[in-house]
Length: 410
Ligand code: SAM
Ligand code: TMP
Ligand code: ZN
Figure 1 (tube, protein in one colour):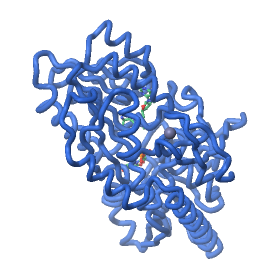
Figure 2 (cartoon, protein in one colour; figure 1 turned 90 degrees about the horizontal axis):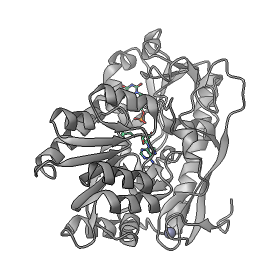
Figure 3 (cartoon, rainbow, N blue to C red; figure 1 turned 90 degrees about the vertical axis):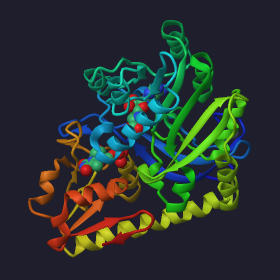
Figure 4 (cartoon, rainbow, N blue to C red; figure 1 turned 45 degrees about the vertical axis):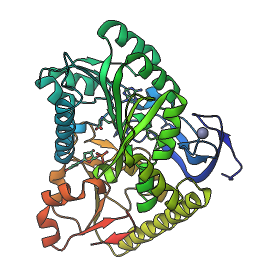
């Protein structure tokens, strides 16, 4: 990767300059059967900054069907913190935007229905758009209406024709997964009511740089948004960024509220966040290059620590077979020689091997049987929730290893 290996921005066709190359990476959620023999799919995970609209994005796109398919193994309801978060989101909409006559809400990427379940229970007209069949089926089991499709312009036209326009289109941890945002915005133009809002929340590039949380970069995360880049893309497609709000979940996110241009007042939060981003230099190549240098240091320190523990004969396991951990494990080279297995509560991941690095995924009961000397916390964004479930680990002398914002043993 050279800074002048420029590609064209997916939003504006400006020059995208790469600033971090995380090497060959697998599909982050492609957990392998332990007896699988076929080759794994790998792609070059390189991230760059658009000189023109400032959108941070991957240089290479993975075909969507390779990531989001019938067996997509991420279930949003797996975390109590996230269940509470989405319940609050639903209640907020029910008491604000959804109070008119026969309101209608659409969720893009509704997954297992963790949010829409609350909307459905309240009797509010709704629709989930979810391409991954198994999670969509779980949502249907909760009485939620789901279309098992990718959202794009054609889906939106069809929804508008059959079900009418939506007061709210909401999406969590999904918009950043969609390279073809032009089609998404044209779709919103079809399906959003004149005074409707499009609200989405995704990992914040300001937090990624601030915490060196480079594991947020993986196949599914195509874009890394800032208030400035979201404002630019909204404007390009006839919308306006009218409010922003920082969220503590998933290691730091921002909730963006968009409306049709001129239809709503713009809150002061937008200019304030854009000004903060200017001060932090988030749209400057030098800031991105400094971030890449810190990623390199974290990677080398983590590798050295795991090699040292292995040489000392310590037992080390990992906790949380997250999509994020595919980036760390493959970049650092965390193979079963260094980390024996990964504990995870998701049945669809258990009994399989992590993509690329082939660590066995086991249930959390194995963690206590017996406790290891060290636990590498891949699901660092759920640290409080996970550590609370394993209070005896530290009592027995066990230590957690984390690497965000830097490598620590505690
Ligand atoms: N909203 C849930 C949450 O925040 O926990 C799920 C997030 S999950 C990381 C991303 C979801 O988006 C997956 O369930 C995936 O199948 C879905 N998805 C991916 N591309 C999509 C698209 N073009 N339209 C709608 N959903 C999509
Ligand atoms: P996420 O960071 O993408 O939400 O993924 C979290 C992963 O960690 C998911 O596979 C479920 C797993 N997990 C546990 O194993 N135990 C827990 O207590 C929590 C909250 C998550
Ligand atoms: Zn651009």
